[in-house]
Amino acid sequence: MNVLSLARHLCEPPRRPRSRTATAQSARALTAVLLLTLSAACSVRVDSPPAPIASPSAAEQIRQASALATAELAVLASSAAPSDDDIAAVLDDVAADADAQLEQLGGVWEPPPRPDDDDNASTEAPSTAPSRTADDVLTALSTSSRAAQDAVSDPALDADLATLLAAIVVNRDATAAQLADLLDMPDPAPDPQPQMPAVLTESAAGLCRTLDALGYAGEFIAARSSGDAQERAAGRAVRMRDLAEQVAIAADFDDTDSDPREATYAVGNAEELEETMDTWQADLVAGWLAQIGAADPADRAGLLEYARAAARTAPTAAADPVPGWSG
Image 1 (tube, rainbow, N blue to C red):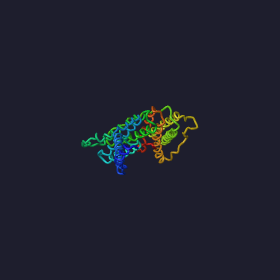
Image 2: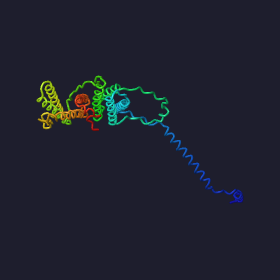
Image 3: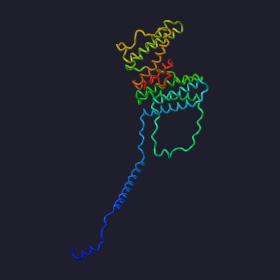
Image 4: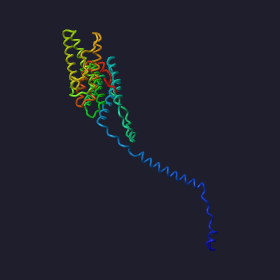
């Protein structure tokens, strides 16, 4: 080191080491910057539009429409003003049945909340709903039943949903007939127009046997009756036996070891016979409904018509919220 360099070195002020306080201040400043950066990034994600809601399938659209109609029916029946106690009892049944049906349908789907829901919320005061009557309930029963009946044949529906809607139709038609009678109005449900499908599955064995048993019971009654009673019983016996044969052919039971029909059936004595026939009539409603799920969609309507016809002679079975439905 020469003299000049030594003099410059001696004249420079000494450098102090960086203090711990300064280091801590720098660290805090850096942390603040990072937090601000992360906060900004989070704000971008939160403010971004949510993913669009997927379009519902055709089956889901039908299910949702049925659920909405059912929920509205429950509210309507609960709020309608009955004119007497008998009508009040039916309205209570309609509301309770609708609640049970709605549960089986899976409830009404509600869309997830969107960021702008609060901004678009209406601030208008709710309007007073008009008073509703039992006539309005009858209209809702009929309208929702016809909509469900039309939907049963839609190929988009799976076996379970088609069967569930068919069971709901049977219940609502029966309830509508009961309510219409109390209101001195005609039954709004159209007369059943059954149509036997060309093919049924082996699950029709119980149905086939029940039909044949009812035919046997009709013959039993006809043999012990006279006049008009005998004629009615004999005619019914022929119809039941004929339907049993059609089912056996469609399910490929006829002339096979799998044929469920028997030569005789235990009908009991005269007093037990009525109870036995009531049981078989109820089984018939469930038996027809059980064929809908496995049937070709084009054949479902005809099978539902058989169930509707059977329900007219089995009011107890039709009174179930979802007749023949096991969930």
